[in-house]
Amino acid sequence: MRFLRSPSGSAYVCITSIMKLKLLAVGNKMPAWVNQGFAEYSKRMPRDMRLELVEVPLGNRSKNSDVRRAMEQETECLFNHIQPRDHVIALEVRGKSWTTERLADNMNQWRQDGNDVVLLVGGPDGLSDACRERAQQLWSLSDLTLPHPIVRVVLSEQLYRAWTITQNHPYHRS
Image 1 (cartoon, rainbow, N blue to C red):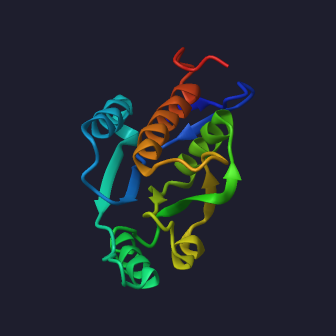
Image 2: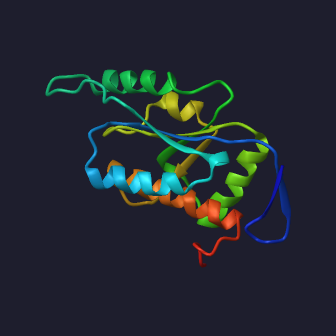
């Protein structure tokens, strides 16, 4: 059992379980710097809050292919990695923007709930309606359009930063 201070410092939260953070991302064959960046922040996460990356293949796309069918293929692959009890968050341009402190509060809440967290990153055409409907939260990293490789690195760094806030670690200075 662990007690964590809330980001505001006004309360303590009792944590009793191990939580896994799983980033499900459409696409593979990322540049080395993307894999290195993700790995760097992933290895900094504590054992009781492991960050894992699962890449699913892009749906078949060609000059004359149906984009909707490609997204259905991606959705099927994503759903194969989601358990019924998982808390699903879709990274979505139309989602809510969070501060890092809000992310830390969310992280504490997820841990209290005792479920693993799955973060969905879609392919070149985004996430399907089915993915957005399965998600309990829609999160927008930015109003900017970010390339998917950068999203992986930014997301892993922000998860690490939020965790450091919950630990009163000096990495985050606001």
